[in-house]
Amino acid sequence: MAMPLCASERVVFYRERGGKSYDPLAYGAAQILLEVPYLLAQAAVFCPIAYSMIGFYPSAGKFFFFALMLLLCLALYTMLAQALIAATPSVGVAMVLQTGIQLGMSIFGGFLIAYPAIPAWLKWVNRLVPSTWLLYGVAGSQLSDSQAQVAYGGATVSVERYMREVFGYERALVPFMPLIVLAYIFALRLVGILSLKYINYLKR
Image (cartoon, one colour):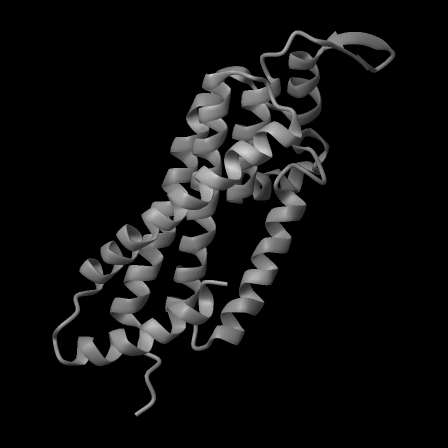
């Protein structure tokens, strides 16, 4: 949904850059700052509703970790949209690329096919896509420390063990998930800024 707006802003950026009014780095930083209130508002409205309806643990720590992961998820997809618009010639091309990227993230993110079940020669794709770490953070924070018992492999095991063996989620790594997602966000923002600096699709 952000792509058409970003595309219209890009035309203005090209014009103002030609007049030496806009610096790509300052413009990129301004885009981030502009998005922050909207992202916070979305997370503040959506998070309590989703958290309670899903039935996650009534724990303040788990709730705020979920809220943080949700906020980072929203920021990630916003930065992806902005990077694609900056790097491609039109909204149509950006949307086609985004569809392919989203498909790859859905297939290899660990939801449809858990990491241990992915063929060995494709496991690197799971580690490459950011949706892996979003899912790791949300599911891992809720379940990878649970000692509740579930039936698995003909025996009764803890949810913690089930998450480790079936999905590959280690409890000790969960706190690092926001940092990994944040790195993706900054990388996408950098791609957007560099694209604005070095690529010009303006037709004279």
